[in-house]
Image 1 (cartoon, one colour):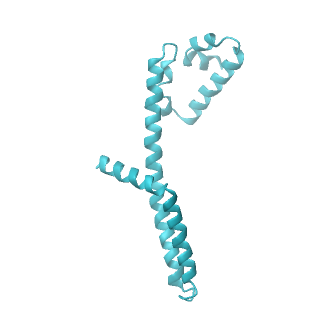
Image 2 (cartoon, rainbow, N blue to C red):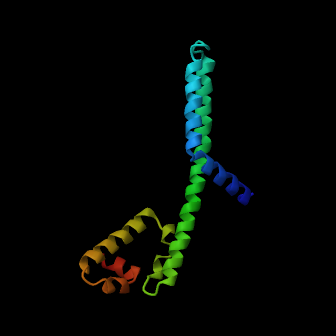
Length: 137
């Protein structure tokens, strides 16, 4: 089921991001607007666009979130592989995406302060561990 949903979500996201899809959507809204006088701007006429846009927006939210989740996870895996492969990279950074926002902010602030402190010699900053950085700040 996971593979099926991913395939459908990927295809829908790809189609929804195409210029032709946008042009088609605009054309449908224009047709709806033109039909207003013929339908006497009735409640049904208004309900058509309200329902259509609400349903499409509701479904698009799930597609967008699914795409972002997959993209984010793939990017983290790629970054983790880079950290693992580079000799001087700090492997303590692998998996920090699972920390809280406050913990990540604390790490980022410590890194920024460390870079400012030793901006003339990058090798000094690469040798410190994340725990050492956090214990200093």
